[in-house]
Image (tube, rainbow, N blue to C red):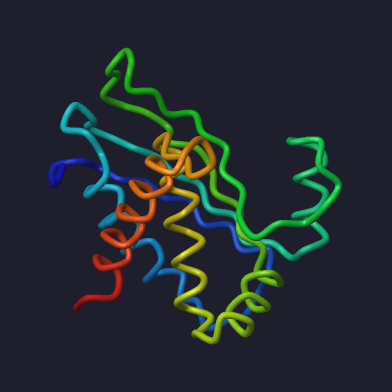
Length: 154
């Protein structure tokens, strides 16, 4: 854990009112980023955008060429090589419409689903990928569980 890391998180909620508390999200992001970050990092910046399905579809089309909505998108800027101590990690975009729908389908709370998506997006920013092979998928699921434990095991 990189406990000396300075974390700056930008929260831009296009969605509006929900049971997701922005101050708690920022606090949990700091905890997650300190856990995941290598020791060479001194400062790390993350942007989080919460949108509806319509805006998510527009972003997905513009930035990935896919004309459909999705639950979470990650756009990384981070690199371990060279080990630059001050970096912008990237941005995580979450569709609250899809988050709400998936929470109902899965049968857990909106807060649980939101943090699952947030952690998933952050892990992609650090280079984790569940689509390359089964070994990478297992590693990413393990890291997701560890990060979610940081958020919910208090």
